[in-house]
Amino acid sequence: MAFALRKATTYLVKRMHLRPVKQIKFTFDPYMKNVTSIRDVASTLHRPEILETNQGTVLKFDIKSDGTEPRIDVNFNDGEKLVFKTLNLSQLEILDYLFEYVEEKDPRKNEGPELATKASKGGGKGGKGKKKK
Amino acid sequence: MANKCIWNTVRLFSTTQRSMGRKVNIQKPRMPWIERRILNAVTEPLLPPDRRPLPEKCLEAHTIKENARKSELEKAYEDFRIKETFNELSEHKMVAICHILPMTPRDFFNVRINVHNAGMKLKFANNRLAKAAVQNSRLRNLEPYLTSDNVFILCEETRLEQLMLALKKIPELQLLGGLVEDRILSRAGMMDAAKLPPLDIMRGELLTILSTSARKTSSLLNRHQTELSANLSQLVKQEGVGD
Image 1 (cartoon, chains in turn red, brown):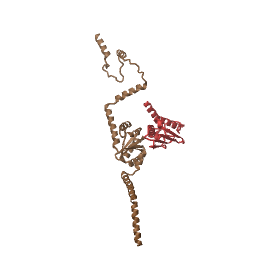
Image 2: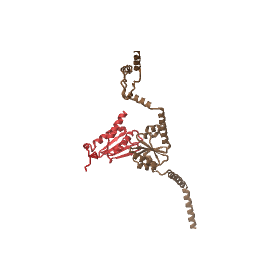
Image 3: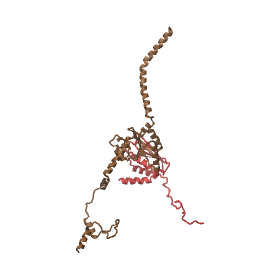
Image 4: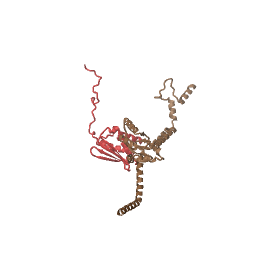
């Protein structure tokens, strides 16, 4: 079971991107129970390869000490807001829901795949050919 | 004839294969002789099928594997690490618990340098071991902090101001709380404590406050006598002028 969860989480982490996301705010009280999931998600979204997908995304921490319930506020570029109350959610569930929304709003969704030509690969004609004098 | 019979019997019960002077291929062993195969088939134990549910079977296999992996030496090493973690946490006056975000090795190196320059040291501890270390000890209330990716910043003296200055430069470390002079403080508590002046100045202020009330009480008690003597002296002065 643990293996399956790990595999599913890895699958999502590899495909996760923040292209349509403007801001993500993590609010939690570290002394409360069930904050592991939000902390794990924060760590996951701070991975360099995910952050590189949109360098304009602002990731904020709001660490409180008043027994606040953990929540993630996601602001999208189109003005839509998404709130996760993560008290009873696992890391996989949060990532799954977030991935669903992010995929739906992905600006690159309607773009076709990039054509892989010889010129785009860089190099074009190599240096192996005979040079004309 | 007798020799052949004996040879066949020996071949049947021998556990090793004959190499016949050739190099034995271990990766692809030769198929045994027909007599040997018959013997193997006949002597193969017929066990009843295991009808237990799959999770139960997996759990048993896992337990057997774990027990085989564990040894006395490993347990002693684990105990040593638990003891070391407890000593690290209890011997330092200031222990800040931070959430560490993933970063490149180069960034991590810079973080280490920044923390070292502030006169502190960075310590990683496995959450399982740290929980075992604080369990049933005076630090047991630190347990809720010990989940997810944690890192400890240790210092032998209470230097909250330097800690805050250092953490301002390191966004990869998010302060969660900590243990300052045997008191568990939240993030807000640590930030408030960092703003306070040094302990000597605080003591001086406390002394001033304490002496102020005493001075006020004594002045209030002496007020009537002072007023009376002032009035009398004024009266004497006025009578002297009248004469």
